Length: 325
Image 1: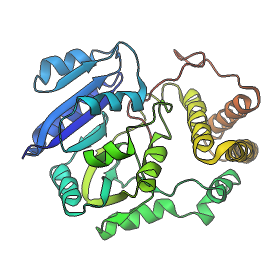
Image 2: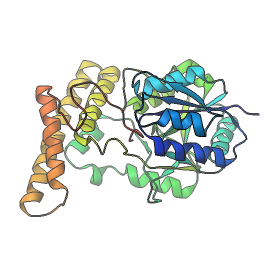
Image 3: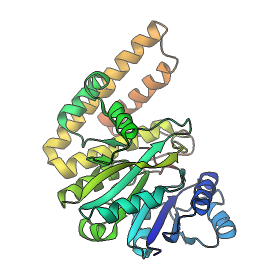
Image 4: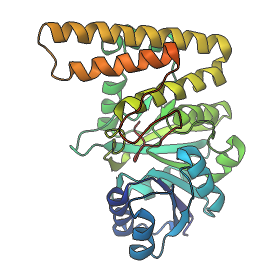
């Protein structure tokens, strides 16, 4: 039965979106009931391309950039399927991916959300599952000890190689398939998150409601990623900080917010020191860029002042083409 509704939120990602829709069309998945594209007021002809080249797609044209959470919630309200696939516009769906993910949900009634193994444009497996942030893991990253003490990326690759589905705390929001029954209980994405951190928040809420989140490496997809963040990388760094501050305040209160703020200052101060030393000794080709990024983030944390970068200015949030994980 055609019970899968696919929801794609897109912003100025015409070529990525065309590739995504073509991959769904050619995958031959018989489960697909409908494809819904929510266009966030793109200025690159994305909506016109969908209307012309993919008449089978339900196109929702927004008059403003709703962001990732609001856009997906709009698509969820429109969808009629038992299963809901939320995928980024810069994703290429591999044959059999949807069938395996839906099949896993059908066979495991306690599971509310699943995601596939994701590879980058280079064909290498991307880390897409991780633990919910804690003071310990955040402190490790702040002190640049994460590569020594935290093994999340290698753990993800090993899980992919094993081929076994496994419970995880968080799955990247670039590709989700969820059970509508679970969404009805958990609620939609929190629209206070414009982009970034909404995947942390949603997965935590699934677990809090006793729905499991599972990584299914037998299913696979390609995620190109980073489309718009390359245009305004410093601004996106600020938006990532803003989203994580909101997450810590929501789930850990004012004290948690204070801890994350303090550790974020340490994080960028440490990175500024390390990258500065690399520049002095002539190491690290991208050290100057990373120094500036940390300087921009420190400025925002300590003064609240943003940065004008290319066409992005002021404090209005922006959305990434593919929404980096």
